[in-house]
Image (cartoon, rainbow, N blue to C red):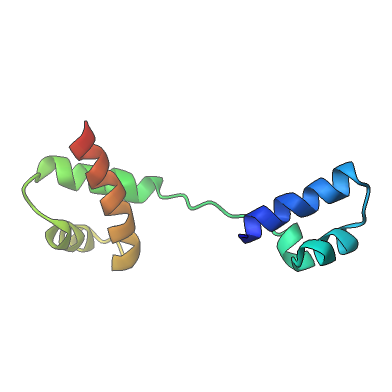
Length: 96
């Protein structure tokens, strides 16, 4: 059972069965801090647009050269973050 499943189960217990948050979290073995946690979604729109620009301008280059070109343009993103976005963008270009 994933933490998301546990959080959903705890929410069900709180809303439908009128248990307290403490009791519901204890019943599904979920820390209260995880119950109250609000997920922060990543905003990669700037990275996506910069990668799209590089990939459309130079379609034959791979990730390494794309990353180097972004660095030369002055971006300081981590290579792991850029690679994560690159695989998403590159896969979307292949399916179009």
